[in-house]
Length: 597
Image (tube, rainbow, N blue to C red; front, side, top):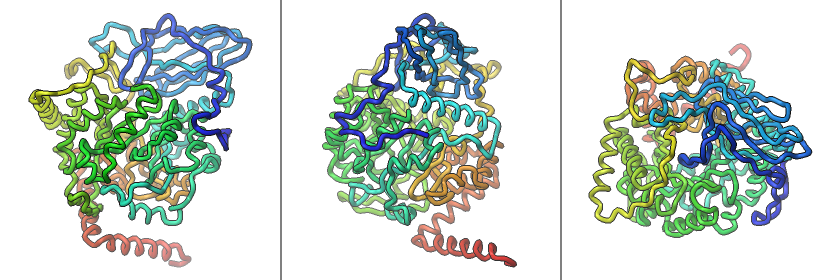
């Protein structure tokens, strides 16, 4: 069970954990190429074999080694040999930490990978590449080693169960959705926030605290997770116990993703974040103070000032915490996309994030703010326009030296699936930049020596007769979220971040993980079909893109359209049709549950 510190000192003077105070230098030796940067990552490519060197020690030590594999199916393995001991690890897709024991007296580790990354994925690079490795941490903290070891075992088991199409899982979620805080400092709420509706869903849990004791109660659900995603309808920097939780997350080897409005990034809150493994998403959604006022309030300039102070304090792009600036395209702001990218370039954020406004016919928000009438349904952009926005954002970011994370690509690239519209958007952006007499283009980061990335960069599309070598992805379900993630929120438990209906109350997360409904969802996805739960979650971009690409079966299309019609009727009836339906459903279940019913 994770040992969690209860009362850490003030953030500026916080206690350094043992794995950092005992950290020893590690050098990349033969078999590793020079340090590179791609997007936010700093790493070394390795050949099929390489060596890490360090000073010998009288005691056993532990190496925390983050490795990125391009293979989906655990077929790539890494072996570490040193001090008379050999350890083998199956590599999961993407970045994942390995816990390696370094015997006393050892001054190096020989690392070997059993298969290389196929050269067809990086035709412009003559090197032999196997896997990517981040700068490792060598320490003498057995508790930290135990955390990473436990997470690794669970991640491998989870991948095996996913690839095997298992519906009842022995593994626990690799990613855990959490609900840090339920109070917000923006009042009235952001115009696109369903504050009242979500607080109604939270019901008796609206004031349930999130503490270190919560993590203890979760047991393996917290201990085995690698990443935590805060999905609270509230502002986490208002929490009084935030320092305690940040220490618990960091000591347990977790990466925290959290969203903030950025309006209370005080010096103290900035100090809390420095050096932490945190991905901080700041919701801005505007390129000018005028548009920001239509969405929230008049705090646009102070937020930019806060972000500039944070980025300077952490040492610029690439340092912790990673800062992501979020833009959700809507009618009110889509014309400011270029201005927004320029703000990202000027501040030097780690990433700009393009995030879709939830597509839900049931949302009936209607605000008058700063002289603008914001009607949610009218703010939703047509799908074709969203694809064009993706293309424009990609081109603006490329030209202005900004890293882009397009969350509209969830489940498949917009550019690949809808290439004509995407290319139209890209050309629109290129023309806009060409016509700008004073572009004020930020200096772009140096090009990566190797273009291969987690989503491999290809010089050209291969000929149909010469398909790219398999990386094992064909064995994966069409969506892996119900295997990888569980969201334990005040408003209920969900199998994915786009789930439309909670599976259970907050306290029912253990039963929900392998509940009959979740197993049915997994079974359908493993067969390449969407479950009815997916079709009832209109915000899911995978479902929406499949619908727009005419990839759904006629029956699924009919179900989706029926669901959308029902949501419109419910909205027109101010939610009463849904309340009546749910009441009738509960009554029927109670009646059927009685003996003889």
